[in-house]
Length: 254
Image (cartoon, rainbow, N blue to C red; front, side, top):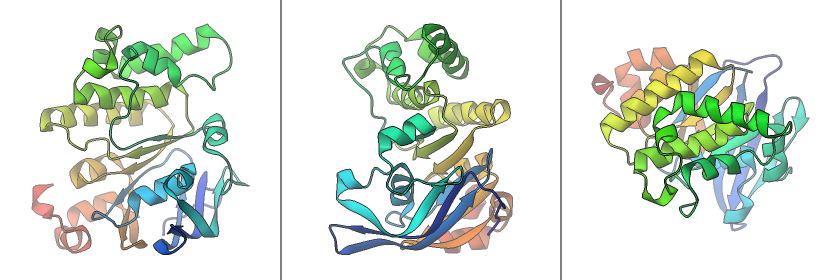
């Protein structure tokens, strides 16, 4: 494992159980340094999303819980901290599935991400402009109802809403899922711009291994609730045989 002596996020040997009987994560440990971009790859059911939800403490809504180990953020134990308090502390998750408030406009949706911000409307306006910088299309659609914009625009909106909260750690779950290739390319360009212009720490779960490996510096591969690889994303991109063996992806397609 590539470790930092003082990682911003540390998962220590956790186990996660659903419905008191189903063991989903088994001894998962990982460290994410401040400013790092880490991707988590694996087949369906490998435990990727569960790992993110353990960090953001969203498991309980699905009858899941961390039954062993601890999760630390910025040196403190956050294993039992509420999702709302974690957002206030700067840990924000972009959920899988492009969730938005369909009856609100695009800009009203973005503003819901600012409920933890302090400093008044001027600070929030600055954050809105940052989002519109990354997603010009959202600025064009700012007065449109979110339920009537495209799937790609809804995904941009979900990410933008998280960014308005000015997170320290952004957890992204399958941002390219179900999007047309041209929209995935556009989203990847925005993510690369975000990487270049921000010191934000990002943990990305993705089925699209090409996007994940190009965007991240480090890649964690999971299988059946365990981590089976933790190393350089570039090394995995170059090792087509290993990539195919670990996650069932033809490396020649990257």
